[in-house]
Amino acid sequence: LDDLQWADELSLDLISTLVADTENPNFLFIGACRDDEADGNHPLMKHLNDLKRKNVDITSINVTSILKTDTNELISDVISLPPQLTKSFSRTVYQKTSGNVLLVIQFLQSLCDEGLLLFFVGV
Picture (cartoon, rainbow, N blue to C red):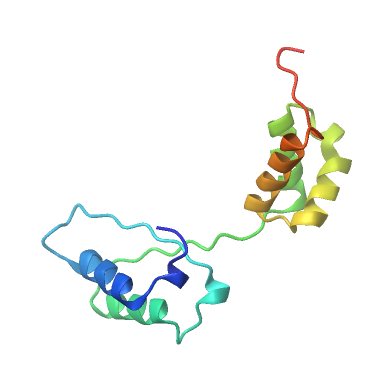
């Protein structure tokens, strides 16, 4: 479930109840939130702390921006060109997206949608 930082209190209560239910050991909940929008006083953080106090296993994965070299590798793979040929383009994409993978993909998609980035299969 994405954007948990915007969930209302009743939804967070329901999620907490489901996650803490020891009667259902096969339940897996995967949630995502923007940590810059949910500080320690945010209701989501309070629910997470409550779950931790109840010894519920929580695994946090912090997703950060990718490096310039990783951006180049991604673009090279996407447009099927050697990395040395995509460096200049990748630098521009990195400057516009700060290495945020979602923004890199959305930017490439918008270029395709506008006919500014074309793919030729089998060439």
